[in-house]
Length: 195
Image (cartoon, rainbow, N blue to C red):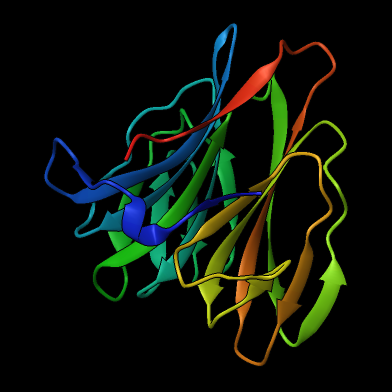
């Protein structure tokens, strides 16, 4: 397990002044970045950056919901509910209840497949081992335990060749981020963001 505490992350202000990003980790392959996982604080309405060629899964972690307007479609990102869309989509975000924070998984679909799901307590279970990829467990609420380590809100634990044991009490919640590397992809290396 590799554990990244929320307190270790470095703030990077957006160029447009609309928020802040904290990179947690990236997956780096011979062909470039296979995936990124980051936290963002969104302070105001505005456009999303263009990540053409990537798929984005966004999960609101705190604050209210966010309406995402794109050409020919509108969808809503609600608290704790992952939303998946094309990273190159021209999206204009509207905050429904003021500033919020979210978790962003972005991945290259020619290299890997990604999924984000929510786990709520009470629960004691072993998470299926990643066959060719990794699992990241991100603490959403409470004080969930992975193996014997207590996570605080915003902490992330990474597993590459292990089936982690999860213990969640009432009010505890995790986001399970699962990345599976495709057979044709080059070797991908987990890179923890610089502190």
